[in-house]
Length: 397
Image (cartoon, rainbow, N blue to C red; front, top):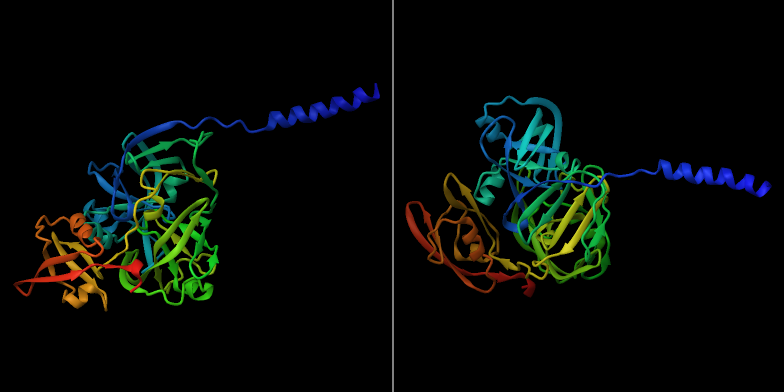
């Protein structure tokens, strides 16, 4: 009888524990639609803002701690944002921001309410991609849903939070997420190191390191050549350096001879030494991804782009779409473009006899390593043709 008396409370404890165990509802598919993929794998979603009928273009960005609208779009809608006293950091600067509070975002098949949009100037992004960028979708949306991204079909799915079965054959990352996801990864060149990275889907590159991290970690081989280039981000343009490293390992997935960018983090955006850099979408686009902020899960499944060649091209020229024209931006010192005589401010008329005025086609021509590129520009009312050979940075010379 004494043994039976002891078993009864034990059974009661186990039963109570099972009763208290959380039963999660299964996640439900809310909507599915196509996205547009920009240079570097950056994702563009079409949506409407609040009560306005205009279709807008938003970049999907895990590197954003909220949601935002471009200042020119706000002016177009004749809205008056509220000053906040808050600032946001980007690689090119720190800016004060105002807000449009308690607004709605209408995606195809899904309306997201009660969003506080901060307002920022994204004119530089519009110039880079050659089409209007009206805003950025970040944590404010990622935190509410499970998102599935399929780069093979260029589709995105929004699911309700809940129990979700993941497809077989992939790997689960468990980044630390407060508002931005942070994940460790192994990088190898002169030596092997394992820093923390920001997972930044809004960055159209593979990896970006801070100059401090490169200096302190001694990651790079001493003879690595650094190629000067210009990059664009929040706050404007910033000088960077381009090179390659031997290996990047994200979970079990290895990539060799990976192009990487290095910049001077003057505004401490990446909070070194907490972060050594960021992982961009030119690497992440090689996977179909399930993003579940509630569970702190990024599920990676290699897709048809997994073995795509990396872009080793270096011309040293940046192109911008400004007021209906394609303009030569920064021309890096010591670059093939500078040696050929291209100047900042030249108006591009054609590239390799292509007069289409397509930013995408012109940028593709500048990414053909080893090829000679002919560029016709207009300068001071005259047509000038320059020719240069696109370098391959993998050759390290």
